[in-house]
Length: 262
Image (spheres, helix red, strand yellow):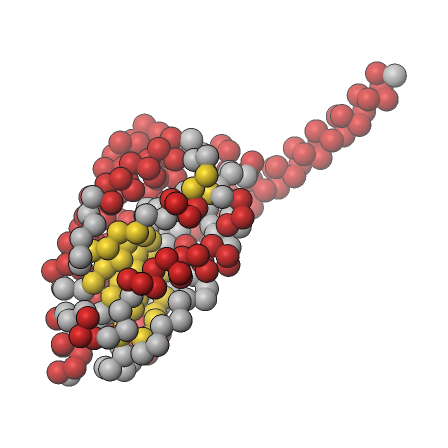
């Protein structure tokens, strides 16, 4: 009788172990590829090199709105439908706030945007699982980098719409070895810091009322541990549209003036 239950249990555990090891192997390979990619191109200069050249020749009359941030920006489809506006996506998968600062001149400011939509920070906070000994440094660096990005755009008189960091969903088993629940508290702390930056020129939108439930991403919007599905982006489009102007007279800034003169 024992053998009848023992063998299926051992078989199931063996299959689970093999599946987990295969998943971890693929994650390790992808991490190695990412590391090599950053060694070859640390600021991601190759990612949008062609598109940036084309975008810089865009229309002078349309409001230019650039979406800037990590993979959550990169995967944003469809972007909100905005008449008389030119929407440009400059999301970079896997990016931290520190990496965004390295490419902000090339991939954002060079495009002379009238409005910028930003979502960043989850890759900073999720690093705590792998680097718990410097958790405070990671959080404070994330806040500081956000401050620098916001200040840079403010000096350029560019209207900025900052989205708070979306919550992480249920973490898949393959990520367990490098995950810490302290990441959720870090996201909350950085978001609290961002909310204090809200102003007429720097609009901070709290995404938690839409996405957060029991400290996690709501299941109906999660596509994996860190990303949202099409329904989630539809909710975001409805959330940000009231803050995206369709008239240049509503967002006079140095960048648009420079484009008109040129």
